[in-house]
Amino acid sequence: MAVKGPALRKGDAIGVVTLGSPPGRTVIDARIRDLQGLGFRVIIGRHIYAENGFLAGTDQERAEDLMSMFADPRVKMVLTIRGGVGVEGVLPYLDYGYIARNPKLVSGYSDITILLNALYRFSGLVALHSLMLIDFRAGTPAYNFEQFFAAASSPAVPCAIANPPGMPLSGRVPGAVQGPIVGGNLTSIVGSLGTPFEIDTAGAILLLEETHEPVNRVYRMLEQLRLAGKLRDCAGLIIGECTRCEEAYGKTYEDLIDEFLVPLGKPLVAGLASGHGHYKAAIPIGARALLDGGAGRLTLLEPAVRPV
Image (cartoon, rainbow, N blue to C red; front, side):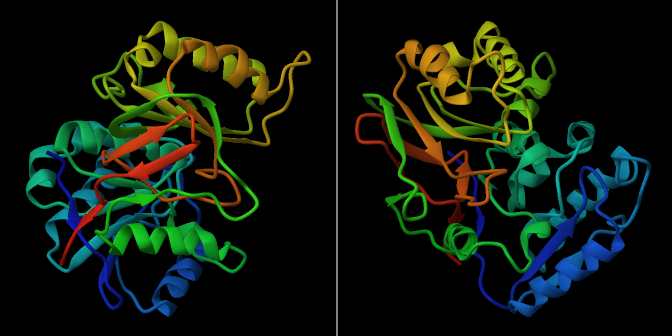
C-alpha cells in the first residue's frame, strides 16, 4: 500500500531544498518571498545556496538537506527548487526506510523525476509531479496553482486529471486499465536505466514528457525504453507534451506517438499538460489511477495525501 504525507494547509511549513542545479540566491530568495506571500512558512535546507559548478553542492549535502526535511516535524511538505542535472547523485544517500516512517509529500518535475520514482519504489511514498519553487512567480497560470494545491491539500477521490479549457486530452488507443502512475521526464527515466534506481513500470500507467529535444533523439530514448522492457511491462501510457521539440527529417512528435507508441496496443492518452509545458497538471506518482484510452480520460482513484 502506498505511503502518503499529510495534507497541506495554509500556514503550514514547507521545506525547500535544492537537489539538482543551482538557480542562484536572488532567484531562490524571490521565490521564497512569493511562497510566504501565499500564507506558508518556509524552512530552508542548510545547503540551498551552495554551488559546485552545475551542481548545487555535493551529492551528500543535497541528500542531507532532503533527509533533514523528513526529520523535521514542523515540515508538512517538501518543495524542490528546480531540476537541471544531478538529482540521481542524491539517491544513494537517502534512507528510504526512514522516509517511509516519516512521510512528506515531495513536489517537482524535470530531473526531479528520478527522485519521485525512487521515493515510490523504495519507500512506497506517493510524490507529486508538479510545481517547483521556481514556478511560484508572476506569470505562472492559475491552473497550475489550482492543480498543485488541490492535489497537495485534498484527499477526495475519485477525481479526473483534466487539462485547462481548450486543451482536450486525446484518446489514441482504446481500453481501460488501472495501476499506479509512474514516470515523468523521458530523459531522466532513460538516465536511470541500468542503475539500482531504474524505473519499475510493471503493471503501471507510464507518464512520459520531454522538452528541448529533436524528435530523432526522442525516438532514440523511446527505443531504449522499449528495449529495456519498460514499454512492454507497463499497463498503459499517458503522454505529455514535448515542449520545444523540433521536427527531424520530416518527423514530428505526433508522428512518434502514432508510429511508435500506438502500435504497442496499450491504452494510450496523449496531450496531457505536464512538466515543462506552460500548463502543468499535478500528477501523483505512485497513486492508483484509471486510464481510459477510448474516452481520453485519466482518473485518480487514490489521493496524493492523507487527511490531517
